[in-house]
Image (cartoon, helix red, strand yellow):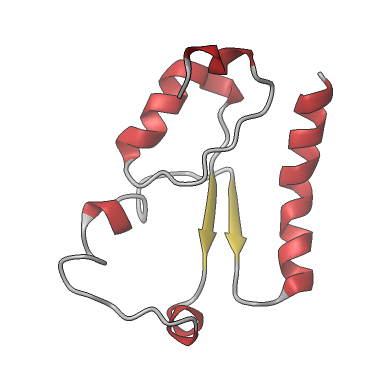
Length: 101
């Protein structure tokens, strides 16, 4: 993250894997930080080619945020385009609001 990041009204971090990743943002940006979890059912993930691999999929980098984090949004990405768009409305509204501030 560049030193100028504090001047941007909206920032999107596409991948955080550990609680310490989120804490870094919370400590630097406080109330400006919002968290979004995107999840899909294991059945849908398997349809997309995912297979559980012991030692990889049960490592902290893959499941470290599965418990103990109160996400601001949870997006369910199970293939229903209309549902996905509905879920994104609040998040997009916040981004637009912040971008115009």
